[in-house]
Structures are given as structure tokens and as C-alpha cells.
Length: 299
Ligand SMILES: NC(=O)c1ccc[n+]([C@@H]2O[C@H](COP(=O)([O-])OP(=O)(O)OC[C@H]3O[C@@H](n4cnc5c(N)ncnc54)[C@H](OP(=O)(O)O)[C@@H]3O)[C@@H](O)[C@H]2O)c1
Image: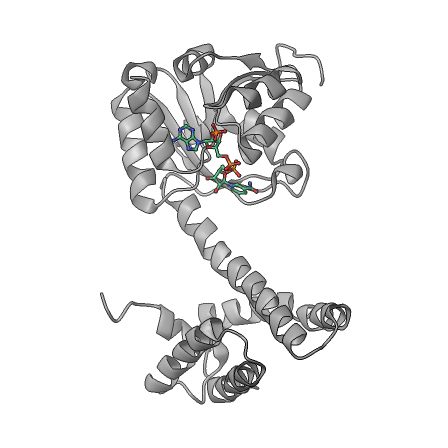
């Protein structure tokens, strides 16, 4: 841990799970004075041995510093902490840097609550593993009033040197992070499903991995191409139509069925392509599936 100096910020961290502990440690390593509180005491003690100051209650953590990072499982946990510890009067003059993953409604209601109780709010989404914090791979999407984000900047820079300012709309980090998680989630679920399929067909996972990496190398360029086609409204021109992609996916489903693997993912993919055909997009580019996703026909 570096020495705390007047030029390094002081901060409290509430919630010392994998991410909250990573945040507290990264701030300590940068020389910040860090006060910590967590429901389970052993996580506080582990941080104290790294140089943090223990708080006996969340109220103490809120009183200890103007800037307080909150990083919990969800907003319900934070609400439970506020209620159980009668914290309503502890937010006056405090800036909450809320890094808990939430729903749009929870994020909005929380911002209103903090401001009604005299606090300021910066809401964010962490887009990296705890081990990436403090490195160039650290990624934080943030929103809040310009003066709030400016005041938080020294802390945010320590966690993620290239943190992203999404402006004043407090919901934006939640929306962008979930949009990105669709991609990450589907890609990773896809690779796990592919591994199950390869194994069921007696293909070695070493061979699967080698080819998965080769196929995966086209993904970055293809993602950019799809986004640009949607941006330009140019989703008709294609080298592989939705119908031909759909046929390929039907073949995946048939192989999965022959090998006796679970078809839950193939059925979901089939629904997407069926919907594309129903909208008359069969001859269009894969990017035209944006019309399938653009609105919920059930709403
Ligand atoms: N881990 C990651 O790689 C990662 C990456 C990006 C974003 N995030 C986000 O960061 C946030 C924290 O994730 P995490 O990985 O640190 O989760 P975690 O390891 O499961 O930690 C959860 C934290 O929430 C606390 N908590 C849960 N319910 C509570 C309650 N009712 N009252 C008081 N405290 C409660 C836990 O306290 P106890 O220790 O007492 O159980 C712990 O401090 C989540 O919103 C997650 O989506 C995590």
C-alpha cells in the first residue's frame, strides 16, 4: 500500500464482496484513505489488514467521508441496509458513487431518494473483473451531474483510468452495460453450448478450442460491420441472408437433436429467425434482425 497524502482522496466503501473488496484494495494501493463497512465482519477485517479503516456501522461509513462507494448484490440489499440502520438522515452533503448493478427503475428511485435526502449521486456500472481495476483494462460507465462527476474524477481515475462519462441521465450506465451484456452473455453461453455439442459428438475440447479461436477471430470486425449497417440503415445488402443463417441454425438444432443435447438455446435462436422470416426479412442481412428486436410485439 502507498502512503496516504493530502493529494489522494479519502473515501468510504460499503459492500466488500468480490467487487467492493477489489475497489477498496485498488484505492488503498493508490494511497487513498479508505473506510470500509460490510455486513459480514470478516471481509472488513481482511481489508483492515491491508490498511483500511473499519467502520462499525454503515452510518459510520457515511459519516467518515464525503465520497462513499456502494457496491452490493443489488439495490434491494442497499434498501435493506438503509432501513435496518435508519440511514435516512445520513446522506446530507454526501456523494454516493453507486456501483451496484440495478434495474432502470431501481437506479432512478435511488437517485431521487438520495437527492431528496440532501445527497448527490453518481451512478455507474463496472464493466470489468475486480482484478482489472486500476489497470487500463478497468472499465467504468458513469452518469451524474457534471459537478458531481468532476468531483469524483480523481477516485474514478484510480479505478479505471479511462472511465466513461455518459452524461447526466442516471439510467445510461445501466442501459449501456445491459446492452453490452447481451453480447457478452450470448457469446459465452454460445461457446459453452458449443462445447457441450462437441463433447456429445466425441470431438476433443482441445480441437474445439483451437477452432473456436479461429472462428472467433472474425467476430470483432463482424460486430462493427453489423452496428454500422444498422446505423446507416443499410441492412438489405448481404453476403449471407437471414434465410441462409436460419438454415445454418436449423442444421445446428438438428445435430444437437441427433446428439441428444438440450435444445433450449437452439429453440430460442429458431424463434428469432422465424420472427425475421415472418417480418419478410429473409433476403436481408443479419443486421436486419434489429427489426425483430426493436419492439416487443407483446407490449
Ligand atoms: N464480481 C464481478 O466480477 C463484477 C463485475 C461487474 C459488476 N459487478 C457488480 O458488482 C456488484 C457486487 O458484486 P460482487 O461480485 O462483489 O458480489 P458478491 O461478491 O456476491 O458480494 C455481494 C455484497 O453484497 C452484500 N449484501 C448482499 N445482500 C445484502 C444484504 N441484504 N444486506 C447487506 N449486505 C448485503 C454482501 O455482504 P456479505 O459479505 O455480508 O454477504 C457483499 O458485500 C453487483 O451488483 C455486480 O453485478 C461485479
